[in-house]
Amino acid sequence: MIVNGETLVGKMVNGESIREVIGNVVITQGDVRITCSKAIQYLARNEAELIGNVVVTQDSVIINTASGFYYGDSKIAYSNSGVSLFDGHVNLNADTGYYYFDEKRAKFINRVRLEDPVSRMDSDRLTYFNDEDKAVAAGRVKVQDSTSVLFADSLVHYRNTKITFAYNNILIYDPKNRLAIFADNLEDYKQLKYSKISDNPILVKIDTTSNGEPDTLVISSRLMEAFDDSVKRLVATDSVRIARSGFASVNDFTVFYQEADHLFTQRPPEKSTPPVIWNENTQLLGDTINIFLEENRMKELLLNSNASIISTNQNYILKYDQLSGREIKMSFGKEGLQKTEASGNVLSIYYLFEEGEPNGLLKSSSERTVIYFQDNEVSDVKFYGNPATEYHPENLILGKEKEFTIPSFIIYENRPDQNSVLGNRKKMIYSKMEDLNESGK
Image (cartoon, rainbow, N blue to C red; front, side, top):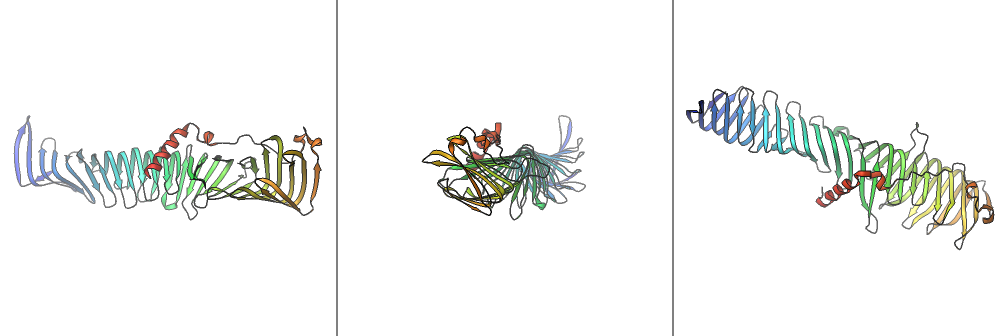
């Protein structure tokens, strides 16, 4: 270690030989260069205390601090007086910092912040590997860019490849869409516009209804994959459960198009159970199902292949209105269901009422059926293509309702709600969502 300055004073302190160098101090050791206002050099230990406007450089790395220490034998710089590092790509700041020159590695502690042109990361501890452009952060990690914010217990980020791995207590929040994803494992491949989210992922999206009431969508699954492409897809796979006011689903594959308010689900080839959807008092099945929303309400629902609809009557629990066909399309207005169209080997059973009293049922078949609704009740039914209908009077079906079912009739009992989807994380999730919404991020 070579030390130069304007004034040099040698002395003995506690039996140790030291030199005080004052004024325009320059310390060099190989490719390490240090400048400061004053240095106290401990000759036997090959160490120096650095005081005032300390600047440490090695190649493209520039470290600034008010005061610190340099250990010549191990080539380590240390400061607990507030320290910053710039390597030409990122700015790194903290209360305390170490820099290991041989390893070209920085270890920063307490109120750590790493910034680059597009994002900012805060944490309690961070290790930065300069040659690898790699950052390892831990403790209250927060990464924020122009569109989202990520929280995690720990994180590994590679600057060149823009690959990030995050672990435990993960929260990804999109303030524009009021959408959050909670999980314990994240792999983010920014250049591929792809993220993989696993270990108990849950999506929470807060919307409002037309009358201003909160309306929250929650989705859980074994795996979620986000595609930040032109349609911004989120794919939930395996044991998918969805809940929203009046709406729920259980399936094994769902695609959520964030910008279009569009949900798509289908039965994977290896699964025998089709997707199940519940909307209000109606159960819907189909090998593929498309759900379109508008202003946070149901606009259109399309069931394709092995489609069926079963609706319950709240006053007569055994009287199920039933409809099956190859394809079914349901259209909704602001007041609810307006029209249902079924095609392809259509079978239907509808219970009839007169002035609110049961009046038998109508069993029918056709190639195409159109059912019109008013005030959420059937107002007209039209059959096309080889129609056949049978009327069964009330006195012949009373107590025998279970005998009047379509071949695909089955009632699923595992309808989820928000409490069952969120489980014991509900309180934590809603607390964090409230905090984020109040803060804006």
